[in-house]
Image 1 (cartoon, rainbow, N blue to C red):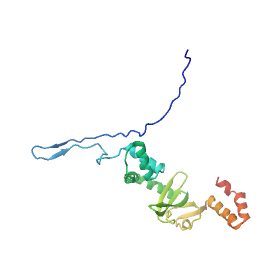
Image 2: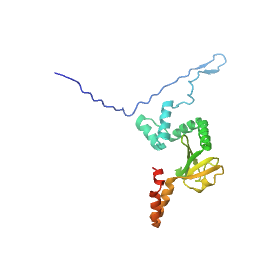
Image 3: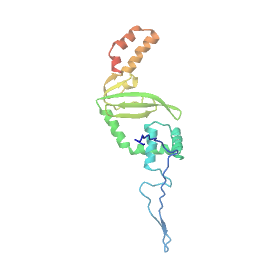
Image 4: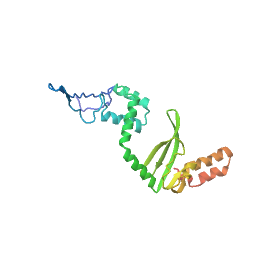
Length: 217
């Protein structure tokens, strides 16, 4: 005699996922008198023979700019998931068009960071097309602005207020800055370097016996 049911659910996806393709047909007519052609309009936003829809474009943008998947791997991922062929150049165009649409927002973020009372700045090297360039960041409690500079010294020169940084000389050359704050992490690294390379015991005592360590937690 049956007394109850036990349920187990298996969640899975089909591979590859289905890619939805919608055909749009625009009727073309010809005038029997003047022989001129008249063509119907396609829906708004369909400007090329094979455009990509907003959902697919949004997925590509998320995978590349948010999930930080490189172009080549992203193209491979789309092929494995959807069985579709998308070139790296198409991905670049998608990102570029969306970046252009957000131009006003980016300008407002930069302006907000420039005029905020306190901002933190840093830079790190990265290679683009095999060439060394620098990714700079300037952030406040609410805003983060990132940009690519050809050199490590391509800092935000128009910044005002107080700038907290890693003691790189370019930050001290910023003409409109009212004051400087030094980040605790680089100071701790320098003190640890003095201990490791110069066996300066006082440096480790200063690092771990001061408030610097707790400030970096």
